[in-house]
Length: 262
Image 1 (cartoon, one colour):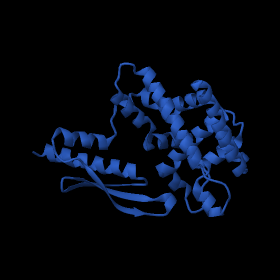
Image 2 (cartoon, helix red, strand yellow):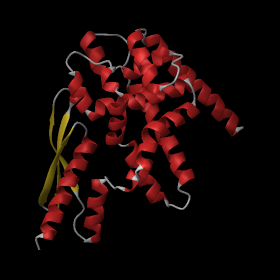
Image 3 (spheres, one colour):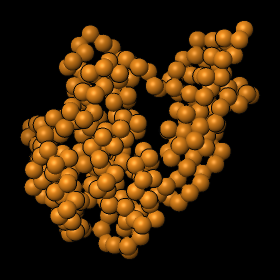
Image 4 (cartoon, helix red, strand yellow):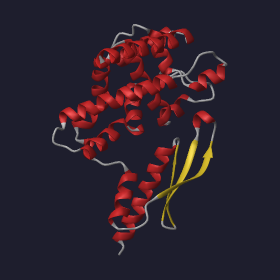
């Protein structure tokens, strides 16, 4: 009974999302679709999903266009991505504990990883953006391309199925980390800094937002990390999480430099 309801709900959700996307966006942009088919290596049956996935909200704002941006597809793609990466790790690392699996999943699905994959695929050349965003700037802006990649995963799921998503995610996100054992490198600087403070029985890090600058679709955050009453470093990025990670990384460098000079 529960499985039957789950299948019914899944079909209902997919149908509602398909209708929402198809009705609100009709610009199929054949040149971009052709380029995207080559990039993804799959047939694009309902092309409007993919155009939606490539549409940044700056384009709609700049052109006073109807419809919505790729944010809803990004939400869906993020969930699909998390599920499939978690399943891969669960099946391929049977002897590892939850903490290990959580760390590796975070490394594979984080903003830097998504941006690197999107950049490798060449999404910066075909993403649909407003005139106020320069294309070379978009390539350097990790959030825009990372979000577009998640939205494309959502589009692939709706247009095809979970298995097609699994193949795409393994090829472009999982395999690059596994092939050179990059998953063993810990880039979660916030976690490292917290572990250091706990091991040394000192105050836990506190992160404070110093500044928020730029338009809504292209914000720049400056965040400071404080341990006790001491400022340990400022991080700057286009989203809060990355700014916090940058601040923690600077703090760790400061700590290591101080310890090496003793």
